[in-house]
Length: 120
Image 1 (cartoon, rainbow, N blue to C red):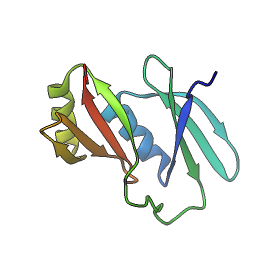
Image 2 (image 1 turned 90 degrees about the vertical axis):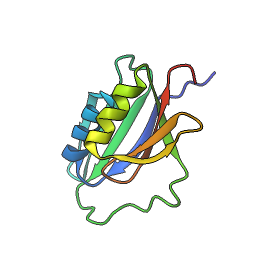
Image 3 (image 1 turned 120 degrees about the horizontal axis):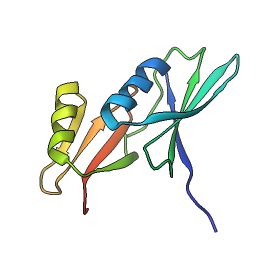
């Protein structure tokens, strides 16, 4: 009856966030909604079955309160070694759980993104 379609993250620097999600996770812009007070950009992977909505409030100058960072989006990769090397080069790995075979990266606004190998 229901289908998940997107998750929203508010960002302070839209261009920086777009560049991060393109480089770190291979996402591309699907559509954009621009208003005088804000811009919303929807990004997706090649399947476009789920989208990440990045909302930029033009007047926002302070960081967003992300609580205890207990929420995250997860991304599956078929090449964990290459993904880890890319994220290590970008300096965005914030936590690794070697026992579970996963790690987390942090976007420019502090949102955590879980990287999971194929088959998990």
